[in-house]
Length: 168
Image (cartoon, rainbow, N blue to C red; front, side, top):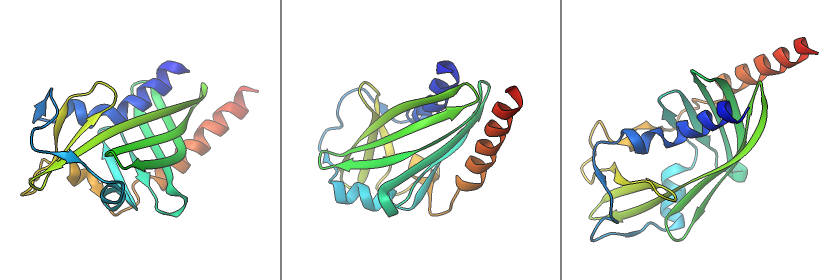
Protein backbone atom coordinates (compact mmCIF):
# COMPACT_ATOMS: atom_id res chain seq x y z
CA UNK A 1 0.00 0.00 0.00
CA UNK A 2 2.62 2.53 1.03
CA UNK A 3 4.61 2.19 -2.20
CA UNK A 4 1.57 2.84 -4.41
CA UNK A 5 0.38 5.76 -2.34
CA UNK A 6 3.89 7.13 -1.87
CA UNK A 7 4.24 7.11 -5.63
CA UNK A 8 0.99 9.06 -5.99
CA UNK A 9 2.20 11.64 -3.49
CA UNK A 10 5.49 11.84 -5.39
CA UNK A 11 3.52 12.91 -8.47
CA UNK A 12 2.90 16.17 -6.68
CA UNK A 13 6.66 16.64 -6.40
CA UNK A 14 7.30 15.91 -10.07
CA UNK A 15 7.03 19.58 -11.14
CA UNK A 16 9.86 20.57 -8.82
CA UNK A 17 12.04 17.73 -10.05
CA UNK A 18 11.46 18.44 -13.72
CA UNK A 19 11.76 22.23 -13.65
CA UNK A 20 14.69 23.60 -15.66
CA UNK A 21 15.59 26.73 -13.65
CA UNK A 22 16.70 25.45 -10.25
CA UNK A 23 18.53 27.31 -7.50
CA UNK A 24 19.59 25.61 -4.25
CA UNK A 25 19.48 28.83 -2.21
CA UNK A 26 16.57 31.14 -1.51
CA UNK A 27 16.22 33.39 -4.57
CA UNK A 28 17.80 36.81 -3.92
CA UNK A 29 15.61 39.91 -3.98
CA UNK A 30 12.41 38.01 -3.23
CA UNK A 31 9.82 37.92 -0.47
CA UNK A 32 7.38 35.24 0.63
CA UNK A 33 4.08 35.43 -1.21
CA UNK A 34 1.10 36.39 0.93
CA UNK A 35 -1.74 33.99 1.65
CA UNK A 36 -3.99 36.16 -0.54
CA UNK A 37 -1.55 36.00 -3.47
CA UNK A 38 -1.38 32.21 -3.16
CA UNK A 39 -5.15 31.96 -2.84
CA UNK A 40 -5.59 33.95 -6.07
CA UNK A 41 -2.98 31.84 -7.85
CA UNK A 42 -4.47 28.44 -6.96
CA UNK A 43 -8.21 28.89 -6.27
CA UNK A 44 -10.50 26.94 -8.59
CA UNK A 45 -7.55 25.63 -10.58
CA UNK A 46 -6.43 22.18 -11.60
CA UNK A 47 -2.69 21.48 -11.58
CA UNK A 48 -1.74 18.99 -14.25
CA UNK A 49 1.10 16.61 -13.36
CA UNK A 50 2.94 14.11 -15.54
CA UNK A 51 0.73 11.20 -14.38
CA UNK A 52 -2.30 12.86 -12.84
CA UNK A 53 -3.75 16.13 -11.60
CA UNK A 54 -4.87 17.93 -8.47
CA UNK A 55 -7.68 20.45 -8.09
CA UNK A 56 -7.98 23.24 -5.52
CA UNK A 57 -11.58 24.37 -5.20
CA UNK A 58 -12.50 27.60 -3.42
CA UNK A 59 -15.61 26.08 -1.81
CA UNK A 60 -14.45 24.58 1.48
CA UNK A 61 -10.86 24.74 0.23
CA UNK A 62 -11.43 21.23 -1.11
CA UNK A 63 -8.45 19.46 -2.70
CA UNK A 64 -8.91 16.36 -4.82
CA UNK A 65 -6.53 14.50 -7.10
CA UNK A 66 -5.80 11.38 -9.09
CA UNK A 67 -2.65 9.61 -10.22
CA UNK A 68 -2.02 6.76 -12.66
CA UNK A 69 1.43 5.31 -13.03
CA UNK A 70 3.59 2.22 -12.89
CA UNK A 71 2.54 1.47 -9.29
CA UNK A 72 -1.18 1.69 -10.08
CA UNK A 73 -4.04 4.15 -9.84
CA UNK A 74 -4.96 6.23 -6.82
CA UNK A 75 -7.20 9.12 -5.87
CA UNK A 76 -7.20 11.67 -3.06
CA UNK A 77 -9.50 14.03 -1.22
CA UNK A 78 -8.70 16.60 1.43
CA UNK A 79 -8.04 20.33 1.80
CA UNK A 80 -5.62 22.91 0.51
CA UNK A 81 -4.27 25.54 2.87
CA UNK A 82 -2.25 28.73 2.33
CA UNK A 83 -0.21 30.68 4.89
CA UNK A 84 1.22 34.20 5.10
CA UNK A 85 4.79 33.00 4.75
CA UNK A 86 4.26 31.79 1.19
CA UNK A 87 3.24 28.23 2.00
CA UNK A 88 0.70 26.09 0.11
CA UNK A 89 -0.09 22.71 1.69
CA UNK A 90 -2.15 19.90 0.20
CA UNK A 91 -3.57 17.75 3.03
CA UNK A 92 -5.31 14.67 1.68
CA UNK A 93 -5.94 10.99 2.12
CA UNK A 94 -4.74 9.01 -0.88
CA UNK A 95 -6.64 5.83 -1.75
CA UNK A 96 -5.44 2.86 -3.78
CA UNK A 97 -6.47 -0.77 -4.07
CA UNK A 98 -4.11 -1.47 -1.16
CA UNK A 99 -5.81 0.99 1.21
CA UNK A 100 -5.73 4.64 2.35
CA UNK A 101 -2.80 6.78 3.39
CA UNK A 102 -2.90 10.37 4.71
CA UNK A 103 -0.31 12.72 3.21
CA UNK A 104 0.66 16.36 3.48
CA UNK A 105 2.68 17.98 0.72
CA UNK A 106 3.78 21.61 1.05
CA UNK A 107 5.35 24.12 -1.33
CA UNK A 108 7.00 27.43 -0.46
CA UNK A 109 6.56 30.38 -2.81
CA UNK A 110 8.59 33.57 -3.17
CA UNK A 111 8.12 36.47 -5.55
CA UNK A 112 10.53 39.08 -6.84
CA UNK A 113 10.25 41.44 -9.82
CA UNK A 114 7.16 39.56 -11.01
CA UNK A 115 8.84 36.13 -11.03
CA UNK A 116 7.38 33.44 -8.77
CA UNK A 117 9.71 30.80 -7.34
CA UNK A 118 8.56 27.55 -5.79
CA UNK A 119 10.11 24.63 -3.93
CA UNK A 120 8.76 21.53 -2.28
CA UNK A 121 9.20 21.52 1.49
CA UNK A 122 11.21 20.68 3.42
CA UNK A 123 14.24 20.21 1.18
CA UNK A 124 13.39 20.79 -2.48
CA UNK A 125 15.31 23.15 -4.75
CA UNK A 126 13.96 26.56 -5.67
CA UNK A 127 12.89 26.85 -9.29
CA UNK A 128 11.05 29.40 -11.42
CA UNK A 129 7.35 28.58 -11.23
CA UNK A 130 6.32 31.56 -13.37
CA UNK A 131 8.64 34.04 -15.05
CA UNK A 132 7.73 37.74 -14.96
CA UNK A 133 7.29 37.47 -18.73
CA UNK A 134 5.43 34.14 -18.80
CA UNK A 135 7.03 31.37 -20.84
CA UNK A 136 5.34 28.34 -22.36
CA UNK A 137 7.45 25.98 -20.26
CA UNK A 138 6.59 27.67 -16.92
CA UNK A 139 5.12 25.20 -14.43
CA UNK A 140 2.39 27.80 -13.77
CA UNK A 141 0.99 27.06 -17.24
CA UNK A 142 -0.09 23.70 -15.85
CA UNK A 143 -2.52 25.53 -13.53
CA UNK A 144 -5.77 25.75 -15.48
CA UNK A 145 -9.30 26.89 -14.70
CA UNK A 146 -10.69 23.57 -15.96
CA UNK A 147 -11.69 20.50 -13.98
CA UNK A 148 -9.01 17.93 -14.85
CA UNK A 149 -9.78 15.82 -11.80
CA UNK A 150 -13.41 14.89 -11.12
CA UNK A 151 -14.04 12.47 -13.99
CA UNK A 152 -10.73 10.59 -13.59
CA UNK A 153 -10.94 10.57 -9.79
CA UNK A 154 -14.48 9.20 -9.84
CA UNK A 155 -13.55 6.55 -12.41
CA UNK A 156 -10.56 5.40 -10.34
CA UNK A 157 -12.64 5.50 -7.15
CA UNK A 158 -15.30 3.28 -8.74
CA UNK A 159 -12.73 0.84 -10.14
CA UNK A 160 -10.94 0.50 -6.79
CA UNK A 161 -14.25 -0.05 -4.95
CA UNK A 162 -15.30 -2.70 -7.47
CA UNK A 163 -11.93 -4.46 -7.20
CA UNK A 164 -12.17 -4.53 -3.42
CA UNK A 165 -15.70 -5.98 -3.57
CA UNK A 166 -14.61 -8.72 -5.95
CA UNK A 167 -11.80 -9.69 -3.54
CA UNK A 168 -14.30 -10.36 -0.74
